[in-house]
Image: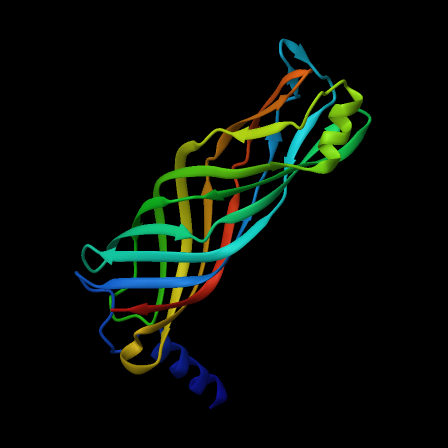
Length: 229
């Protein structure tokens, strides 16, 4: 009897009778999102001189995700991913030590075409998506530790850091679980992969310009809630 009750409850969850995911619906989702870079950095270069054994690193950042989806029909949606700015600590290894380079903020606006394979009335809605990402870096700041290291190399002033904006492909998997009145409230989890490549450039007065090519290619995790209008 317990097994039968569990199966009935599961069937009710997956195949609810409420209307959902129809053409013209708009879904707004929000939650905590963490960008976890899978960093692949070239060695740092000072002008034409490669500094062997050096590399840049980018730490995780968390922000509030803001995600909107417009349903083109019962199974296809167009999603726009935005967020409050992410902040990342930057580090450099090599040069005899590992030190804080500074920090940067970024915004990763992304547009994806989504596919929802289940029936529109299902209370559990997995989905996949593919699209394009454009990442804007701003508010770059050099850490005091980095200026101290550059001073030992002969720097005559404070260094300046800049990161090049990036564009690339993006892909996602996610799922909604509907609840509440008319199943309009949603619990959402999602995972994105984004192709993000940048060039870091540090202008060091009296020394020169230090550069590195950095592939971030992060996984972005989010969990939160949504509402279907």
